[in-house]
Structure formats: structure tokens, C-alpha cells
Amino acid sequence: MSQNDLIKTIRMNYLFDFYQALLTKKQRNYLELFYLQDYSLSEIADTFDVSRQAVYDNIRRTGDLVEDYEEKLGLYRNFEQRQKLYERIKQHISNPEQITQILRELEDLD
Image (cartoon, rainbow, N blue to C red; front, side, top):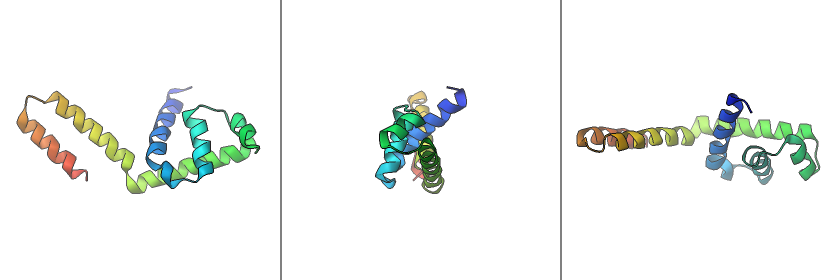
């Protein structure tokens, strides 16, 4: 797996975590098998007795859909920003002024 594929898989896993409740059962099943359980398109096709192309098309469309949800709702983006701010707090635990500033930034995310 290339570095880009790994980055995309990690991103899709996060997006799936945030937006799976907005997907149909079939969309959830395909994404979970492909990205979380590392099934091949052929394995998913065999499991659901559909063509490999049908699985590919569904995964591509569903991936586009969760990316669209992320663009509109920003749950993953906010999660990443919070994680960065939490790390900064840990680094500045002995500096109350710096922590106060970071906490303001954290509040501004909402």
C-alpha cells in the first residue's frame, strides 16, 4: 500500500466513524469491509453476490458522499484541530497564560 493509499484509508476510517449514521446499511457495509477490514473489491462482490464494478461504484460514490458531509459539517476537521490544541496544552502545562489562550482557541471551534 502506498503512502497516499494509507493516508486515504486513515481519512476514510475517520470519516466513516463520524458519518456512518448518515449512510444506508449497504453503504456502511461496503465501506466497513473495504476500509476497515481491508477486503478486496472481489471479496465484497462475492459476499453480496454483485459485480466488482457495482462494489467499486458504490464505494466511490459513498466516499464522495462522506467527503461532502465533511465539507459541510467539518466534524473531522474540528476533531483534528482539537487534537492539536490538546497537544499544545500538554506542552504548556506549566504556563497558565498560554493554556488560557489555547482554551480560547478551543472554545472558538464551536
